[in-house]
Image (tube, rainbow, N blue to C red; front, side, top):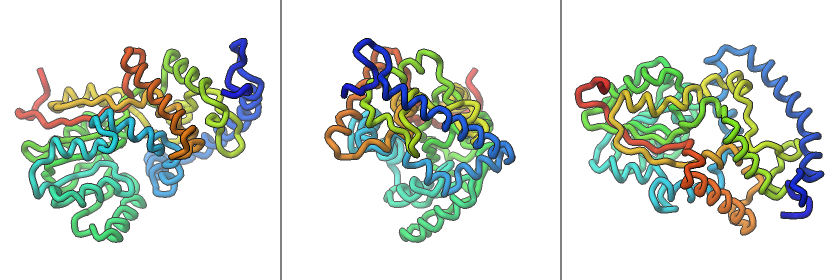
Length: 346
């Protein structure tokens, strides 16, 4: 760390760190106030649809932690033990061994997962559903452009209230979609009805605190990790100075901007266990990396030795915290099936 690092030799925040906080805070407060005022003018469902329209989703995509190859390889190892094998490939190898299977993708956005499945020789047809009509239309366009439209169909579906179209399905998959659902009980019931006998639900989900409302201990872990970073990696975009907090999401503001975001995320696993038979749960990590690297990931260049080394050290830090029991896994990869008797556990 340079002399202008996060903390001085006496343990106090450095001058530049405090200056970044001073310059950034008024701007951040003003932007939040303007965003809240605009967001309140829209009904909740309209806000959700807008938030996950192609333009909004594309703006968010570069900011998330998984954009770095080092982070993806760390997660692949957690899911499959192999840095080159992602969770989808791994779970399909375990739970999709027959041919001519049908698959449903929940909250598929612009359809990347539908297209991955359509290229798999075991999958005969794929249905993709999403709440945002613009995203569904873009998914259909991309499928046609890649010559996959004969294998993939799409529909606009609100997972909180609509029945699942088509089926029965041998596989139902979701990637970061279920944590946007408020009616978890109803969703898992609808998934169970849509599954074929022996069919499997596979998902990778955020299951941490709702609205990312972390407690003081987590905040302290994140702040400590942030202060360990050289200033280069703490820069916020748009001349907003340096990040001063390891966790920079305001739960109240988030609820206004996107009422669906992590609305009942910490209840996903308990509700699932009460609704279906869980075959496998794989702790995926993310308790440190996901909130810490949000937006800051733009300061890292894939393949840059120094940047990759910092990311590896953060992955090692998260792994050590999890192994010591000081940090749980905010993300999980799960396989589940409907109960043989169709009922809930006693």
